[in-house]
Image (tube, rainbow, N blue to C red):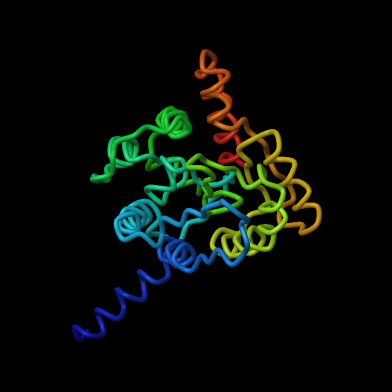
Length: 240
């Protein structure tokens, strides 16, 4: 085989991986909606440093064509996915649990602490990410007055973001076709997702789990109990 032909084959193989599809999805995200006054949209995928971390992560854990089950959070926070580009992954966990060094400010995010303690109990990052893909109903995050804002905390934003959420779900389902998924958040996020799914029929079943931040803020003493709940439900799904 000629060197040029060999290079083309390698490039074609890389193009066909989940990593390539995921990175293309994130790179092409466009906040083509009016978020409303005083609301700032966070898009880490337009930041060079964040994009390098995002690329390193997905190439490490998703350079294959294997199926995954989708897990939907709310939207990225400014100390986790808003910095690293990876949902529920702060710079500390990205380095210590995922093995990806970074020069980001090592500021912890509560949700990331829970998720990676759970991932360790599941079997580690390699095993977990081989089975699951964590995303969010809104892959882009929001802040207002310098603080995190959930998409459903502002009625104007929630009304205007619907088409963006639908488009994002549809594109991710092309990467990981699924009839069943998980939703992080048993309250407003789950209610919104359920209503949306009744209209769109994206999934036959949505399994709700408590949101990690709620656990860490209000039920921290029962953290181990919730970790076991997560691991049992995720392992049960993977065993089907």
